Length: 432
Image (cartoon, rainbow, N blue to C red; front, side, top):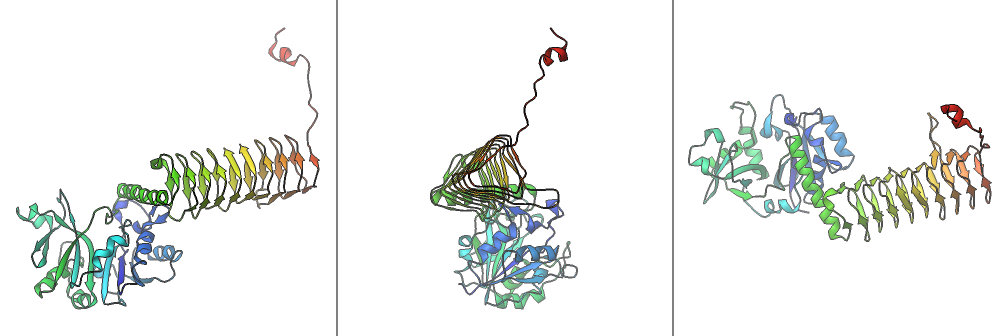
């Protein structure tokens, strides 16, 4: 692990998101954008501090679901607003400090390597933009970064500069301890800016090195459009990773896979598939437009147009089109079409006919259905839970199983005799 501390600035409101949710808590590929930054930061540092203010309780609680070794610092945003104010209450463990923004979810550990192997007092990230209009220009000389000129203050020559401030910095700890107390809020926004340290450090002849970084990894998310663009990039990364691991994807641009999904063996995903939560898929075939949520699928086929809801486990099982499975364990089962299996455990050799449903909810509580081996359940059957179907049972089509147990080797049948009224058609329509 590098002797590096990382501070992530996650205190802002994100008003341009037009949302009541704090900006850093908006999801990208199933996890809050702040999660992605912390996950990558932990690959580089054992000392990570997250600066919070807006909705601080929600932000802290959200991150503590995933990480148990973070430090949180609360910014006094009323008295010390701005990026410089965010660092006033921060203490770090190591002599080098990397400052990241909480709205850059596409950062990777590899993309931060350039900040680690430079011994300058300050390393300042820059973009090179074809059209830098609206951005602060970074003036660079042979000795390093000289100054930052805001767009509105730039002269004609300075406006030709294409290097702009990307907002990521690495500091020696001593630099922050020296200059954070010296920055002020004598500006139009009345905020304390981290960029002011550059001018102060330059005046003292400190070394400030520019580091050119790419836009994709350090793209900020400030609007719902930015969020959608970041999602597209994150999805491409996730799918490319798993294809390199041997997963076959048909029309991958139509497939959605969340962070946290994992694959083993050679699986196949057809177009339009959506896989979310901490799903595990092992050597299985997921057919077109199926949805799988927080489940485990092993040596099975699912779909097309099937829905596997959370806490389900399928082993050597075939689930066909328009079948919904919820919180169930199916071992060696076939359910070809148009069925609902909820709170069910079913064993090998069992066949579920079309239109079979488990009636697992009475309006107050959920109940379990247990199905043994080699059970044949005919079409349009209702299994009223709690119920146990033992091994080697036949259930006739159209049966409502309302007893609590069907014994091994039995036939269960529940039908009323059909009633026929002769010539009713003609009487009803007044013909013949």
